[in-house]
Image (cartoon, rainbow, N blue to C red; front, top):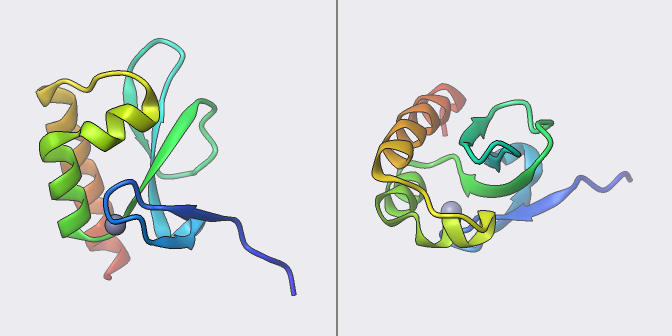
Length: 93
Ligand SMILES: [Zn+2]
């Protein structure tokens, strides 16, 4: 059986299949984006597809910014939260 890549959520530390997590990437230009494809080059961090993890983490963004090794502004965190909540709702879990 082929093993799927596993990643853990920066918020609750649950390990899941990479495809079951939302990826946030720190780009070379310093911006932070939600990566729905999982293929954007850059340092990535992962969050569960559930409201609790997204909201908890992006309200403080402490662990996320640590994982990405840069600080995240409130504006960036809010924009990310909106995109990721929409993606989580679409995933229906
Ligand atoms: Zn989580």
